[in-house]
Length: 152
Image (cartoon, rainbow, N blue to C red; front, top):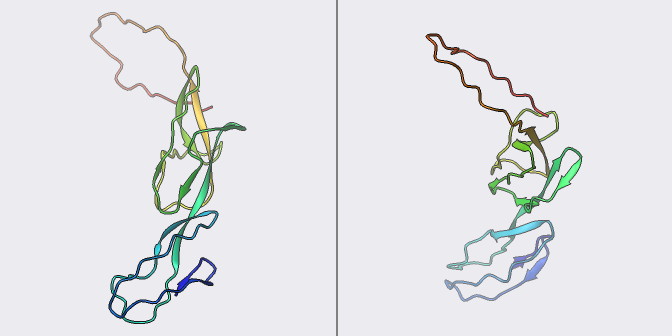
């Protein structure tokens, strides 16, 4: 007996003792992706109830400030790893994706342990065209200059 995603009977098949059984067509359920059936049917030796196993599909949203970005990746499947796209913006360098405009943790991917709908916010830093400085030859050099990155 094959059950559907609600636990109701989807289809029943008669199988000769010890024979294998073909699985029925996958049941499509909105918001989920069919993963597999929960029982091996390579050698059937008793009456079985077989259920489908699904993985949840979650939404991905991308923003630059309050503006929504179309990044061509708008969802991911539970347990799947997704590399986040890198947007471009004229005159700016992309710093990374963050879970809020105030967050300091950069996300480059959604790994298999993350689940749920996610909103990512892009942070950029303006590219400033500077002329290189040429220092004259000297005996002493600065070796300990602190660099501070300011996020917008």
